[in-house]
Amino acid sequence: MIIDIITPFPAILEQVFSESMMKRARDKGIVTIELWDLREFTDDKHRTVDDYAYGGGAGMILKPEPIFRAVAAIKNEREKDSPRIIFMTPQGEPYTQSRAQELSGEQHLIFICGHYRGVDERVASNLVTDEFSLGDYIITGGELAAAVVVDSVVRLQPGVLGDFDSAEGDSFTSGLLDHPHYTRPEEFEGMKVPEVLLSGHHANIEAWRKEQALKRTKERRPDILPPENRQAGSAVQKSKKRKQ
Image (tube, rainbow, N blue to C red; front, side, top):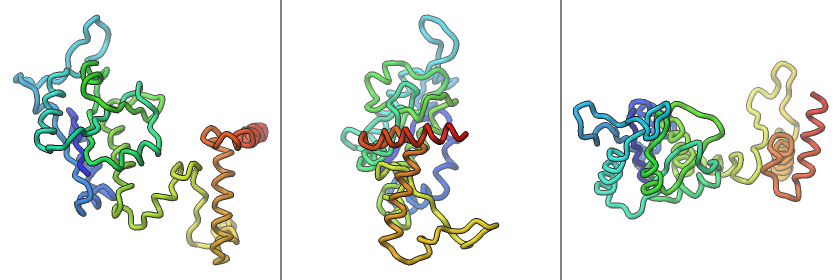
């Protein structure tokens, strides 16, 4: 997999992709992650990447020319057909684990990191294939949002995690939140590990984990439950609120 990220502030991401699983994936040759400095694709001595918005209003807008040039340069170097070009924006589709799984099957992803008030609409309309949002809030730029998506995609590549089952069992992958986890010591300040996890009975442990995952999802995220389970989930949520 090849991931190219276009940003006016590449230093924000350099350390992020040089640690932990991202470093492991790059070192193993599982993924290539390259940062492209948007300012390298400007044509003025000040390396200007933004300008005032037509129609007035506060804030600056990323200019279209450098972004179009950067994407053209990437395509020319990679010689890949039809990369997915992703723009992280509050106006985008809510990003989910199912989208992470979908993107993990792609050979080439290009991320455009917005800044200031956003990008010229001609970029979004003519270059971008996918617009995603991490949630209903605003952050300074698209770098951190892109890093989150890249991490969610790369960790699904075979060979990145030590045990691929650890990715398959993550929250949302099965449609439910993850079950509780415990490690040593067996007892800590009077708090004990559930007996079933110490039993060595794998079928009982698996049944307990599924039960706990369903219970946790009903309590915390009834909105992601299958329709037949949502009524029960709402009842649990209301009961919990009454106790509070």
